[in-house]
Amino acid sequence: MAVRAIRGATQVEANERDQILEATTELVAEVMARNGLSTEDVISVFFTATPDLTAEFPALAARKLGFHEVPLLCASEVNVPHALPRVIRLMAYIETDRPRAEMQHVYLRGATALRLDIAQ
Image (cartoon, rainbow, N blue to C red; front, side):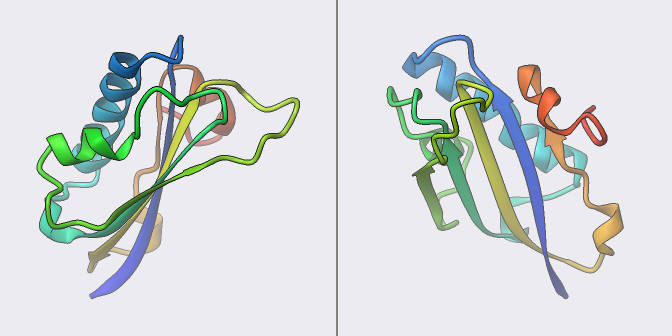
């Protein structure tokens, strides 16, 4: 088994708890579905949020999806003046036999602008 990393991001309209949880739930579910993963495959997930998102920890959404035994961490993204606002990012570390080229990175909502080359 190899360790692989999967990236993803999403954007919310406002710094509201329900929006953060809903968008993060959608992002985590899409990463899992597109990559055919179960929580048993996930080593850990690192979440960041832009400094304008403070209403809730994104990791709470993953916990509600069943990531009870997966180490999760949240941090604030670097406060770059021209950065896209209200963005939640994740990097999930997984165990898999699949090559790196088969990993499906997921960019949703307004965050598709971050990676137009791979956004779906």
